[in-house]
Length: 272
Image (cartoon, rainbow, N blue to C red; front, side):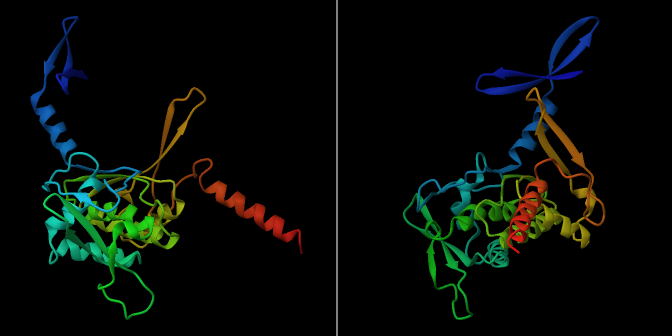
């Protein structure tokens, strides 16, 4: 038995291909369609490019349990829906402070259809409260890029699947390493996460969480993607041990940094 996908008006219809006495018939599987539809509507997707819809404002959008399309478009509406006294907003602000990116976040209503996201800058010293608020567009790009990631992880419920591309974009190395803890905490709350990354520092943070017992290694799946000589995608999976270690690194991942460090040390040593 195989699954067959056929166009149905502007949608895709899933059917089962069933062999029957040498003949093949297409049978619509309603329950399978419903299950797949439920799975797809429970996805929170954050792409690699997640700029605000316009530089300084967000369009007010309906907020529910489902978020069709890229989630970063819903950022201001999600925060507005939570409200200033929400426990989810408090948790998001804790994540921002843990990453040392901002002291707080709030939403300002511009008109009936648009919102602004304001953040309290993380300034040196203890004398700065959340009174120093600026538009999200006026702070570092790392904060504006990671904010939808943090909001998605807090908005997600245990049955949700959060898919994120390169969550480490434009973040300081300290923030990248700390982001691993935020992601692991979300998984610990029952949220499922699929993460595409080029950051060995983020991966090292997840390994550390495994070694510290913060997350069971069976809940972590590492998959390396590469191309063969014909251009076909190759996927290799590595099992994670209790100490956070795993099998061989993929070619050109950690080896690149180690080679660069070696070249620098050799060059610096030649001047001795």
